[in-house]
Image (cartoon, rainbow, N blue to C red; front, side, top):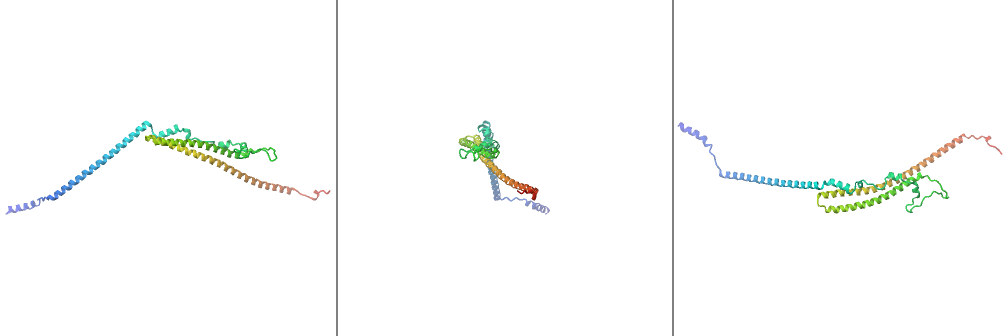
Length: 269
């Protein structure tokens, strides 16, 4: 009896180790794992294609950089070449060129006698040195230098306008020719050079216009200074008149106080 009970006691735990196999569940799990593996492979393939495209783009950029470097080696740096074109073809002096005379030179060269004889091509009459009686007199030329300065500046403005008109016409012709060359440019380096030249030409054209305006402002400033000086002289004249009247009254008052008239001062005849 004891051996049989021992067999049952041993048989009980052994029955709990039996494995239950579900064919359907196993098939489903296998299919899921196979699908995940396929998806993973597809994702890896897409990543590989994207990396390949990036590599092709990088190679194309490297080729373009190499071409640009060869252009720079053969033709030169476009930005530096543009400066060279400006200084060589347009002239370094044109970049800082001035027109006419400076304001200081115009004032220094102003001649009062020329101002008196000025007629502006017959618009005005000459101012001679004779009175209404036909007699000569000596003028104080210093009074007329201010008017000569305005007229000298007006002449300078006319000169500047003539010179800048000629220069502006030349610059506009150069701009038109450069634009025509830009349309036929075949390389990027040539385009950059022509663009640099256009920038310089346009800058010079702006400078020419600015110098014309500056000369007009100088003429206006000189005229304002003359009007200001005339107003100061009028005020000076009025103040001097008032001071002279006060001084005259003071002298007369002092003289009257010093005069003592007595009856013996009169002589009867």
